[in-house]
Amino acid sequence: MSAANDPTLKSWIEVSPDSDFPIQNIPFGVFKKGKGHRVATIIGDTVIDLYELTKRGYLTGVDANVFKQEFINDFMALGKKKTNKVRENISKLFKHSSRKLKGNDKDRKAMLHPVSKVELTMPIRIGDYTDFYSSRDHATNVGKMFRDPENALLPNWLHLPVGYHGRASSIVVSGTPLHRPKGQQIPADSKQPVYGPCRLLDFELEVGFVIGQKTELGQSISMDEAEDFIFGLFLFNDWSARDIQKWEYVPLGPFLGKSFGSSISPWVVTLEALEPFRSTSPKQNDPKPLPYLENKKKRNYDINLSVDIVPENGEAKTVCESNFKYMYWNMCQQLVHHTVNGCNVNVGDVCASGTISGPERGSFGSMLEISWRGTMPVDMPDGTQRKFINDHDTVVMRGFGQKKGVRIGFGEVSGKILPAIK
Ligand code: MN
Image (cartoon, rainbow, N blue to C red):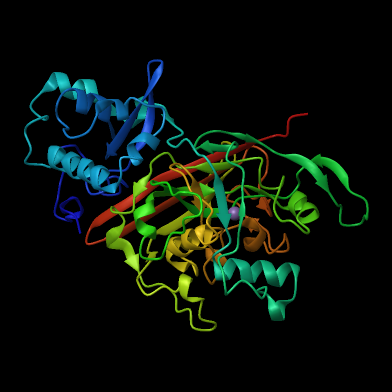
């Protein structure tokens, strides 16, 4: 484990105990500066401009221009040896005993900004986006609702991480509102489709990862290599229009019910920062996966996840508390399977976990499951109920791991639903 993970490290930047961004985290994101953008990290509530930090000589061994960019792609493409070194150097510069930058008021002013004063933007230029379906509890719940409760999982599910190619163009950063999608749907009492605003708008609680190294067409990634290709993780709300999805998905799978939008959190937390939260992966004995997918290591992560629904001017209601450790297929297995046919991946490609549900209703990661297809509405603090998401509701997802007094988190991904455009 890197020195940057040392739980005893403290920063000279103030960090409140419930912050997701102590000096052990050092995630990467992007904020707007003038007409351009800057790649940054964050400690506590302080955003650190990495271009200024490098240009003024505090960070060496890396070209400053890699941080004067709209996205973190070029930085990720430097490779983990370099990017991990940058994390370690940032850690040294901001640890409590370091006086170098702390003592220079002018430089500090030029590169440190309160997070409340900056606009965080989409951190990744996303090339391709793939969504998986890797939580056993989620797949079982959906199978029970829509197919046969006795055979909830389809025959392929325990043999491979099921996925589909999603849409990258409509992925937005946290805080970006989305309009309710419109499309075809079949009313309960009809055999004919109608066109109109989605009536069953849902969220999906997911964690995404971004690819930091490309492969060539024809090349496959093995289980032993997979972690080298995963730069970091973020929260991912894979919004879903359940009524549109239900009508359109046969036989080729998700399409317009998914492609109207997904939201990601602004900070990419490195795999290295999450190292302390590795947890045991579920046993896969019945059936055993084929050898190329066999997992022999701890490749799950103990990260607490939650979802709040916040009505306009109203009180938040936490509708889900789940955990990333519940995944049946882990990220490495997803990436290995993704490339087993020789499909190439590029820097900036995004894969999402699929809805992360735990075993109980309180840990289900979508309203479809929480309200059990609308049969069990959720009571809100203002006396109203929710089966799905209403116009003007904001959905907020949060995630963090905590161990030995150190909390490493993602911040939040928040998205408001506006009425459909007429
Ligand atoms: Mn999904």
